Length: 402
Image (cartoon, rainbow, N blue to C red; front, side):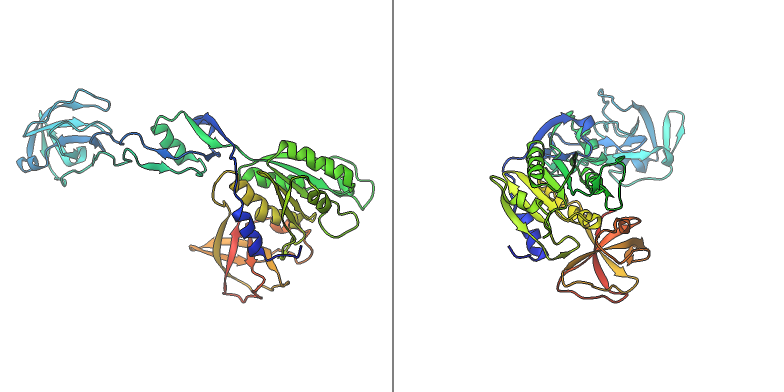
C-alpha cells in the first residue's frame, strides 16, 4: 500500500461510521466534561408568565402621565397571590416576581420618589420596560442543546433550569496505550547503558487523550518480540475502544507492530503510510467499532500524530465535532519548508491585538524526537505538500493545541 496524501487520510477517517455508540445515564452533577447524547428540548416556556427584570413598581405605562400613583401593595418574588393593578396604582415588585395582572411596565426604584403612600415619577420609561416576556429565555418545544455538545457550565445551568437531574451522555472512549521497543525503560527503572531511553510517549499520549475526553489505559512497554506484541495488542482490544501503539511501524528488522496489526483477525486496514512530516510511518486499522492506531516511536512524531489521528477518533466515538481549532495567523519571520510532504511544525502562537501571530523562537531544527519543541504557547503550523516556504508577513494555518 503506497503512502497516501494527508487529505486522503483525513477523508478516510471522516467517512468512518460508528455502528453502535456507547451511552450512559448519569447525574447532572457529574456530567461536566462529558458529551451529550440526546437533544435537549424545552418542555416549558421560560419565563412562563411576564416577569419583572429588576426591583421597581409595576404600573400601566399610560399612567405615567399622572405623575403620581398610589402604592397598592407589595409583590415579592415567588408570590402566587397576585393582586390586579387598577388605573392610577402601582405595586412594588421585585426582581423575578410575576407581573401583576393589568400591569405592562416596570419602573425602577431609581426613577421614582416615595411620598407617603404614593410614588412620584421623576423619569418615565418606555412601555414594557424591564418586563421579561413569556419565552424570553426559551420557548416550549425549542431545541436548546443538540446531541454531540460537550457539557460545560452553561449547559449544566440550562439543564438544571429544565429540572433534568439525569441525562444521557456518550461514554468516554477507552484508549489503551502500548509502547514498544526493547530500548524502553519504565519510570523508575534503572538505566544500565546509554542505549536505553525512558518511555515517555505513553504518558504524553495518555495526557492528550484525557484532555480530549477519553479514558487512558496504560498498558506499559513491550520489547521487540512479535509474539509478545501480538498478545499485548489483543489484550488491549479486550479493554479499549481505541488501541494506540508507538514504535515498530517503520521498515526496520525489529518493527513488528505493522505486521501484528495487519494480521489481526477481523481487522480492516484503513491506511498505512501518509505523506506527512513528522510521522509518515503510521497506520490505522478498524475492527468493528474499535480502532487500532500504530504510531512512530519518536516523541514529537507520536505526539503530533496522536493529535491528528487519535483525537478525531475520540471525537467520532462521541459523535461530536473535532475539538482542535484551526486558526489563521501571520508569520513574524520566514518559514522554511523542509519536505515535499504535509508538514506540521511546532511554532509559538500568540494572540496580539486580536490577530494570531507566529514565530519560531526557541524551536529547534532536528529530528522528530524533539518533544521540547512542544513547550510554551505552542501551535502546529500546517503546510500542505503542495506548498513551499513562506515569507514573513504571510498568512498561514495553525492548529491551536494549547
